[in-house]
Picture 1: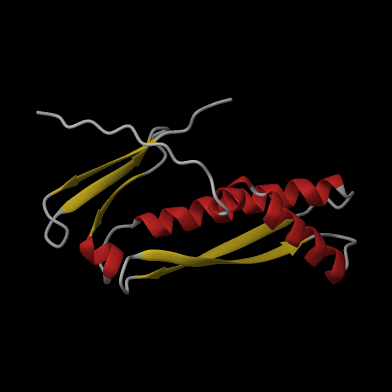
Picture 2: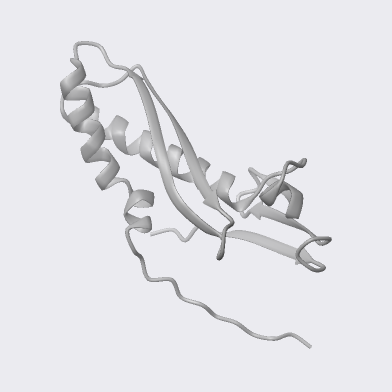
Length: 141
């Protein structure tokens, strides 16, 4: 099984520092800062990337499950709204998945039923239900 990697570097303190995030595949590299995360600024933030990962994973899982049920979709589009609270300890409080699909021959009840099953089966959704997170930390001199 492949191991996917992403990297981030931060320079400076929280408010005046700046950072860069990059995917190992080279498909994305971008800047982030206090303003892009907690205010409005040019660049991205971790929560936006979490949302992209969740929307992409769910759309693929849902499409696969629709096809398994004999309803190959023409398209599935998903938006993930990541609710990030900064009161007390910054926390991702919830993620709203909003999905729309073009699926010939399917009724609304079937669509919603398979969507709910896909939400539970999606690897990123399962991660947020509680996954082991390991840490390897070393101070460099």
